Length: 403
Image 1 (cartoon, rainbow, N blue to C red):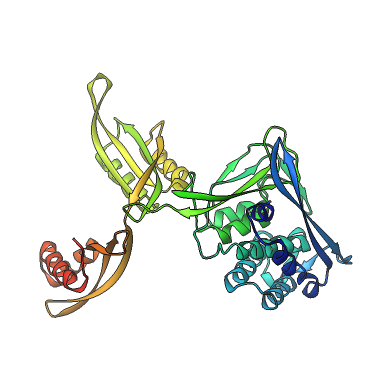
Image 2: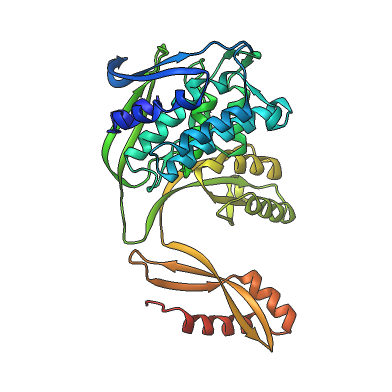
């Protein structure tokens, strides 16, 4: 479906086929691979459908291949292809990730692992097809962002028996790489290990909302399964990032809960736990609730994909019965951290400096990391305020700050 969507968005079919022709040369269990495309309708929507006609050699070992053989074949294909380094790295990383997950699930070393479905020619065709498609569209040089993955539901039958969806390999990949998932919308398998692996190696970030952009091309890839009430489509949108007066717009999730029976010590502990778990910011405001009961509102600012994790901490640490959440769009300046050396009281220290840039790349603000300031102040016996003044004065000379 991903390959079909990329083709529908303009990927070069001949370049993809040229790469697929290499697979039989280095993968002994495959005689030929031919790519066919067609326009299909699913629930009334036009999309691109593809067929990968794969001629496979019979295997005496019940369709197993060693993980080492599979990785070696992948390396040979990348070395003899016309793919860019980025596309080759993507293909090799995807195959290695699949192999490592299989070995982890079966409790074996990679060199001792034998593959069933994951070691098929279909897997190589999917991975190398997508690598060539993304390469032909020059997408490896841009930002690739994905929405959460719909994994479906119900059960799936494969070589190790019948298990609930998502399949163990899918679950392990999304866990290791913190890919947000959604159950449904129908009780069938909607995300395969190969598909999720490719997404893990393609996407730079995941977001519940689209980034600010000008959409230029849209591609739809159709799946083979006919779903009851949902068009079985995967959509790819190609576009140009929308610049603002700042250097970017990003979605952030705001979580809130009302608390009227929690002590200050518990609140303080919850705040610290949320920060340690990755919240962008946490703050507490005083409030007066019904019946004039005094209390607090706990606010959390976070990446959308961290909503479930941080909400769980709010429930566990405060005992609240409900958490409100909504997505805000936040204009941000581009930020970076650089380390700068300073001499204070005859001693040399390194301080992390937080730099903010405007849309033109100019530095508009420089701020030292206070934890570093605090440590230096303790070491040299000066007030933290004085150390911050010394560091800020020297940083102002070092960096050209645009007012």
